[in-house]
Amino acid sequence: MDLADQLAAMGHGRAGRQSDRGPVPGRDFDTTARISLEQAHQGARLTLELDDGGAGRALEVTIPAGVRDGKKLRLRGQGGKGHQGGANGDIYLHIALAPHPLFQVQPQDLYFHLALSPWEAALGAQVEIPTLGNPMLLTVPAGTRHARKLRVRGQGLANGHGGRGDFYAVVHLDIPKTLSASEQELFQKLASASDFNPREATTLEHAHGPTST
Image (cartoon, rainbow, N blue to C red; front, top):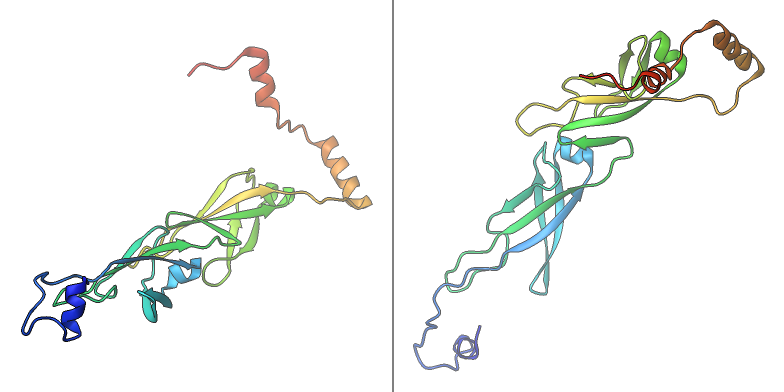
């Protein structure tokens, strides 16, 4: 407000004088809500602490299920107050997903780092894996190789339209840091009995050159 408007509001302006500025809309605000993956999946209610021109206020906000990282939610009329009949401003709420200790999101699919022993990968196994709900059993096919993606449909992040993305368990083969005497003996027997050569393809390519496609 300019000086004339302030004087008029205080009763010191000319009698009957009205401001000629017309309606003044309220100010829009931008703020960020950092939420967990579970909150994005299930939805949540948050309390935002806003600094509205020096006067703090709390605002209850509903975060819809399936919201994505980087999504911008518009809260109509929750911004600064309008003047002289002007509409209130809006709040633009930017969603930021906090990193999860187990899962990565792309964009509604979940990726999980699944550690397997060599024998689980070679022979096949059933292993328990975490999800955004209850843990579930995942069947690992025999002969599963390192970096293979095992897909579980419909166990990803909610998409906001009644569906869900998919869940990918990305295989990582691991071995014991130290071997007992019996384990070392078994690995030595396997090395003697097996003719598997994991470098065979690269050895042939080096000897004969890359094959044409």
